Length: 271
Ligand code: MG
Image (cartoon, rainbow, N blue to C red; front, side, top):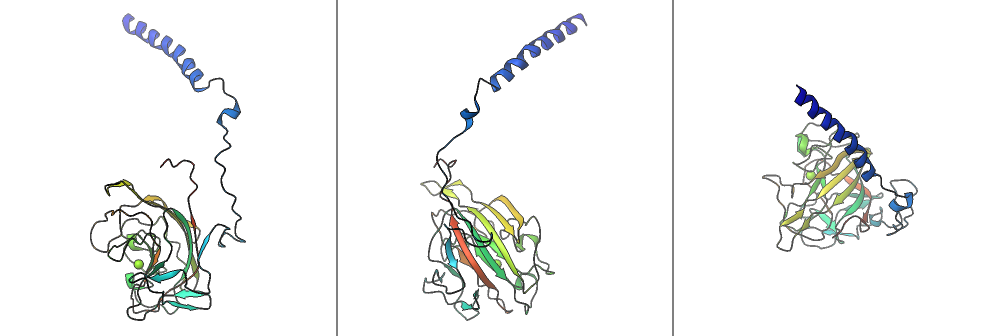
């Protein structure tokens, strides 16, 4: 017992000296200026009139007037969806299909608004199905789909709801509005990086606000979003953003106020 008591005393003595020594290491003689940096200076951006309006450095993808920024995803001919009353509506015409941006992107912030028509019919995945493909990597690829669907009183598999990364991420909430009301996605997309040999260096990450509610919080994407099978990555660099014509029998959905900001200023990213 005496030995144990002596050992305890030694340990206590060592700790009594060690703790202040460690604390001293963590707090050297620093001035507040030592942790303040003045470069690189972030760019000045003038915000929109409201948070839904494009800031000064945004690229406008649809402002209600025309679909000049879009092409057919299949053959890159001019987009042939329907522009009317300030909205861009999926065309049900046979063979028109998905559309994608002419421009390509890597990391970005995206704002997009969409509306399910009040005349919507169908159920499950066949009710207001569309999608925002955050990277459209080629006609033969599935791409990376942020699902668009009528989830107001419409049950489906939860990793296929509006606000999901299709069949990968269950949204953190279901803040769907009624058909006929405009809904918003505000997306932060960090594209995947690939090594020179095509293997994955870092996966994609995505954060999504759905009607102002966070539904994906820095979700680590597992790869392309497949209808059947497991997701996988395939190397790409920059990619268009694609909108889905799902081909449902019900009335098609509409989009408006689409803008994107490329995220090129990142003082922490070393690559
Ligand atoms: Mg879809």
